[in-house]
Length: 198
Image (cartoon, rainbow, N blue to C red; front, side):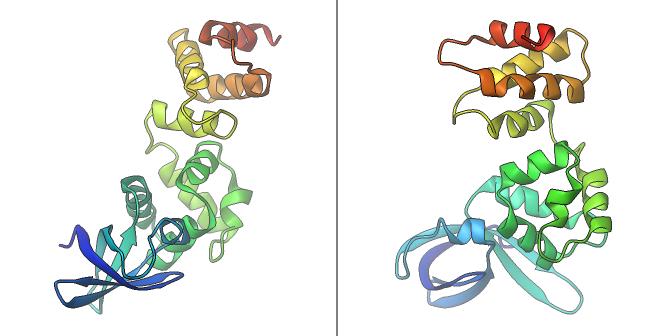
């Protein structure tokens, strides 16, 4: 199995690149999220690979980050979702947006992706929403409203869970506080806001 390709980016087009590795050209299909992060043609780069093998064919799918490749692999595990739909999902939404939609069971958002209808979106949610750790789920929820590197919302939600609240309830309570955050707001302040609603 091919895990990554390290070489020259010979050709670059949306959804498809050619990597020159030691004089051999490898065609790699990439989602738009990864395509946007690639350097210019002729540059040396490394692409993480998912090597998809079926009885009829083989194909290489490339990713700029490990979390994109992991999400692609999770999507492939859903019955009725093939590589084309998985690439479409990562082209339509970022990994964080996908995680947020899955954790929040947002059928409308997932079915807005090209090639994914309502029934497929519901199946993806049912099969994947529990695949993320509490921390990943909270980071996805908090990430939409928090500044990069701001872990206060996640920490506050974890505090609520330790107080006995269910994960989904803790996420909703903390999300309601996200817009009220200021620079000096502490995790304790967020927990207090979530508990009192003020």
